[in-house]
Image (tube, each protein chain N blue to C red):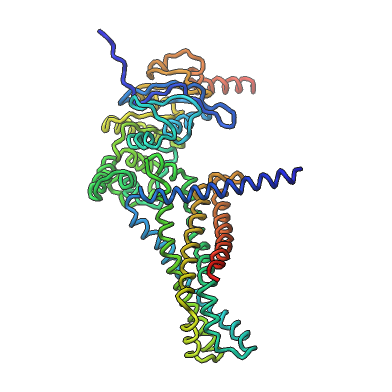
Length: 260
Length: 263
């Protein structure tokens, strides 16, 4: 019987959590209409998610391309198809690895920072202070980040993919001897408009999903029954990163199933 | 001559609040006269902050009525809440300043986000509020770069920049030394007279509150057990009032008894 109670309680908590998160995101989008002086805060959010995270995107992008080039070359060489290296690298990056890895990197840097910042603002009564001033806290704190994610995640994904192509060319052509022209023409032939569409739709969806989860966790860090104060902020930040990473992979499967 | 009843900025009738079945406020009744400094005294854990948060619509009371300028505030009624928040400011015990914004940005924030006025006017009014609180040399400083007293003044500048009719102060002197406590009460009294708002303060600093306030009330175990002028408070024979007011004398008596038993 205790097992049933436990299972029932967990299920109810999950349903409540999904409902509460959906309500939070809906409130944020509704607050968009009433938000004032948004541009400056969107620019600041673009800086947080874009400029600040660019180095990590570049580094991870180039090494992903290098590894894909290396592994792809050795697999394809078994079948004497080294000429398809550009196809393998480009389609892997555009359709799957680019959007997913870029999103995971952005969650690790911008998402965790957002959850921690909102958690501290909740702890120090800054969010309640906004409410007492008559300022819509969702509109002020969450809306600019969500709008910025719609722009930044696809852009960062594009950067990741392009740098990954270059990494693949570096390991495939420069180090392993695949003809550079063959590599780049395979890339050009392989990537179609539909693939680009899939890539950007995924990137935008991952952006909204991960930033809203991180914002939700930070915003409600005071609801943690298991921890208080600084510990609650750390728990919320961890949850933000874990939940959004898992849900990005779940969403990746769902979106991919529509395109395959 | 017929006596006119004082006009109340805020009236509280039968306010109740309980957490997990434990009552924190029980039938609180209070009237805060317009343009006055009204202090709610009470020991720690008496429910003072909960009372203030109920008034500010941060916590929903279980029962009771709150009337602001004669109109009833209803929790959950967005229009009524916004109207109240437009005319009322709340000064947090922790100041609740935005630590990533400069002093000027902190003061400008409520105007930027709630008022339909030009940027130049926002800048002018924010600088004016900072100047009035003698903070004009610190406009570019972040809250962490300011002393405790300056942070308090900055929080007050942010509270008054919207020209509120009512300012709620939650333990404005908590954790401060006696000189700073005096300075904070002096600041509240000075700017209350200058700007003409009604001030409602909750604190447990009896001597300073009695000097600075027009009226005081004592909240004990969730109930208002005294309300009157500071002079009436000083003269009251009510047991809770005298215990709270003469706590230093009681301590003196206890210590004297300990010293005698030690001999």
